Image (cartoon, rainbow, N blue to C red; front, side):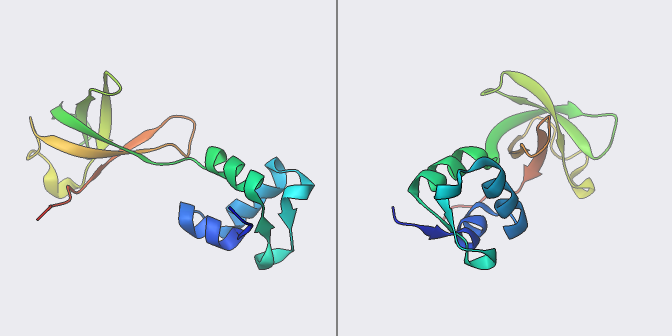
Length: 124
């Protein structure tokens, strides 16, 4: 794995260049980074560390147990977590998802994960 541009890494992981640059300059050694500005390059060790430092959204499947008091949420059971979690849904799906299996995306950018409904991909 040769050196890669930080702009390409940021685009690959779906984060802004400024966030990637802040992460690189805070966590990496000076010998892992070359160049300045948008022409910043990261070596192999830095790329391996970048993989560990960037939070990745995780997709689960869960069964909707009930509606939550807030109409924008439903309560789902996720087997992988063995927990009931509130999942944000669009209001147009209110009341239609009870006892259905849905796909849930975990957003791990904050302190506690947030769970959002994502549309099920139809395979042909």
